[in-house]
Image 1 (cartoon, one colour):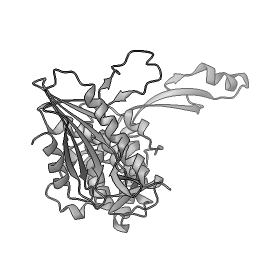
Image 2 (image 1 turned 30 degrees about the vertical axis):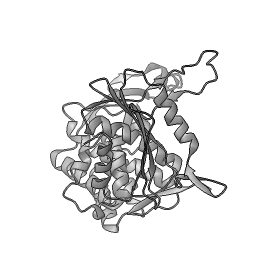
Image 3 (image 1 turned 45 degrees about the vertical axis):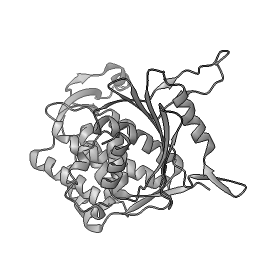
Length: 343
């Protein structure tokens, strides 16, 4: 059975906002009581964005439509028309450009509205509002929402005001994916398995430090083993987050390890997971000698035991092990992460 970790929707929303490089969505919630930020609340933020688009006018563009017709118009597609011509039917296949709202941006909007309409985790009033907006775009075709769909979206000057709607739609899609993979889910919290949460948190940390601080350059570095011999079967050494100070002499390497239990048990003795420590220690030992101030940080989820330990190797190198409580307030999580970089 997979171990699961409970995360409030409000904090999962914040994590995914950074994962998707949209921290401005968090800033828009600064004046909102954190306990009010539920799945339904986020769905209503999406509906508010749709309402703004409706008032401004849904964007349209030229869309190519192919149809069989007995009236010539647009461009005749000969290959597709030949069977009709050979059978002497008064029909040809034409390709026409129509100025229509049935474009990708509006299709994503419609599909998201439909998903809200059938989502049992949102209030009836929210579902009714979603259905109302669906009626306003009846000519738009829905499409299956996938991550690949969002990667196809590009904004120009004429449709840049769609960004907020698309960003929240993407977050709702991510939350829905997680809810389908894991059983316990509500308006307020989700229980995620260790693997899913670790993947989200790694990318969150990378983007968080890239966006929120300016003293360090952020990278995920691949290092070469300092061993002679055939390195074909040696494992890859790749950090989750490497923070290199702009002075070139300081570095912080961060590794996120999301286990429900941060301790391993051996003959009744509790200790930190040895392979995590070995891995981080190896990363640190492979850093260039020019780095005179080197720190490695292992981050675990809080599971009832608050941990904040520091170990010194020498005047140059230290290792820290800390816990982050994902059920804490977002402000507290933010503050604890910024402490790592001395801010």
